[in-house]
Image 1 (cartoon, helix red, strand yellow):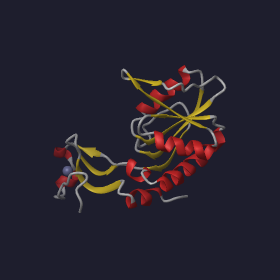
Image 2 (cartoon, protein in one colour):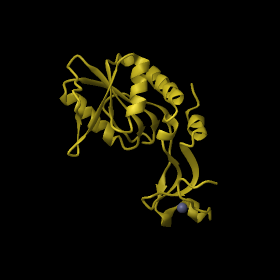
Image 3 (cartoon, rainbow, N blue to C red):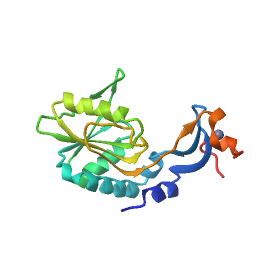
Length: 187
Ligand SMILES: [Zn+2]
């Protein structure tokens, strides 16, 4: 098994410490998958590993929500030897555009970079089902849901990562006197 978190740290995609997020909440870390996926070799490695976890589902197509799911969806599809298509928003509704289609013969897996609440995965599953396909599973590089992403299909990820956020008044790192920094600042 590949060391996913090492790959993320090397690429600057995962920072651990004490951060003030743009929401104002404090966090013990932050994650930016695009920074690891900017390296095609890393994207391919991650896609192959995730594809291996999903191979038994006999997938015929990968469907990803734009934009975050595109690169990893493409690499998982490459590993499985199937199509990679994506859903994108039109008037706030996630939909298949560009002539993409699915049929009732399709066995679809939903692929994203990170699953947090599972909301966008569920929304993408609806797109596949409305197109007539069977959703046979879902996968992500990182599972941040803490087991909370309850989906009605098998869900597999390469790594589970807990990065809790806190109201500053209730932040244990603030209580411990650890200096807070903004994401992106070095040191
Ligand atoms: Zn804090």
